[in-house]
Length: 335
Image (tube, rainbow, N blue to C red; front, side, top):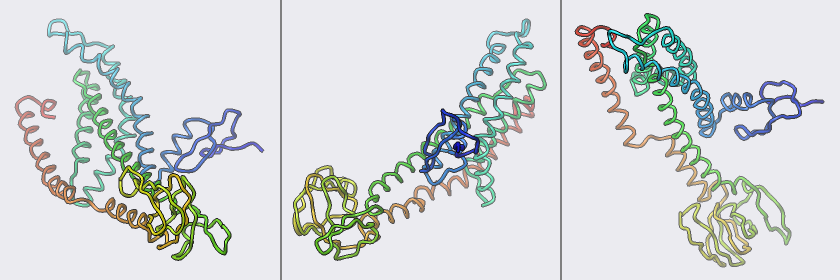
């Protein structure tokens, strides 16, 4: 029976794509299904970063078209004059194309900004998303009105590039969080894997989570310790950089304590377990890191309080300036 695409369910041809999305391996009929699955099945920090990257990549295609069609429309302002204006049907067509190409960018990148702004307003706060949303809507609305009226003052490129830059910053932030999460997983992976337990002179593979204090495990060169313990036999250099940051190996011998997540470099050790995997040093570090990532720092809380005052102040100043310029130079200049 012929296989089907993991995302859309269509039958696969001989050139099916293989990809791993969100930790799930699959076969896809096209690149579009891979991208769609990255967006629809985003999970955790890594999923959020992947989703933002896909959105940013698709939006950049349309944003570049907006830039290419917008740049020539500045020619009448740079080379035209009152006696011989250069504006004409060609420039009008370019402005219409820029308006059309900008719409997908507003939908792809503006949607999350709109959602974040609405959520902040429901909580009684006006964050930076509100300012970004107002700037983008004002630039696009004014440009669209000028295009329909046959005027040459358009700012479609400003609207789309603002969204691109904001999304790029959020992607970098999400990617940094995902990297931190992967580093934690790499450090704590051994306690979620298996271990070689010695019992009655026999070796048996058991899940690291099943180890209890008093069990004896054997750790080969290159393997990580599944949990905390004390060396009872053997001698080896141990890499503890994952937990302590110290790059130099530490020699361990009978009586030395070892921590889960560290790695034996050049020797085979037998270790008596002193703590369950869920209570090891690595597990405690994981709990502290996850708690720290959930809580906002004092600087972030201060920034939130200042933003609560700054954004309304900026809006009031903008409205006052817009009203003044509208009364003296017209509505377009006021906006």
